[in-house]
Length: 254
Ligand SMILES: [Zn+2]
Image (cartoon, rainbow, N blue to C red; front, side, top):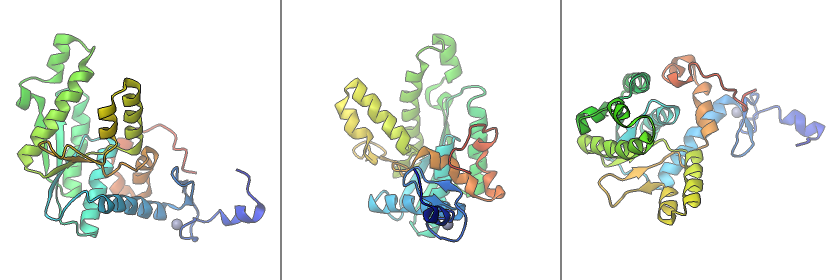
């Protein structure tokens, strides 16, 4: 996009506060904004999604599906902040599934355990071994690596339901973001699965089942979830350990 000289010099300042230099261009709006304004708008947009869609009611117990990955780590942090800041009155818990995959879950479970301490949220870990009597390692040994994704999807879902029941929560919040949902929509269109197609775009699902699930990041872009922890101080950054060893380029930071 070509810009005139005058506009160009004005665009050197954050388009929200007009005071600081922009640090990134939002993929959603193409606005150039500073770090400080970015995390304010990022958090407030999620607050709006929660309020406008009545995702939670005061007094509810909510489990956050925590895998140790970027989406659920950022979700746990933002939810605990918003719960405090806006007095949602929610009891928040972290819920993790240990599939029993050597070397894969160990690191991410460590991340979740650190989040438990840093965010002050009680953590419940449900393991395949306890729930089903076997680990994914044992399944892979039996059936080979082929096809175990199908197992993972079905059993993971069930394990989260069982864990949520053990915690006696009213709802399960997951870190599915706008990119995940777009991908699922495409897959369901390709498969011609109309029932799933309408279900996968709902912000709350399973209201008739044992535990309703909701997606506070439904409108949040993955690129922003990756950038978000970078706008914080190093102390808080430590809790987002998925960033360490991150060698991808961040196209929106310059
Ligand atoms: Zn600003």
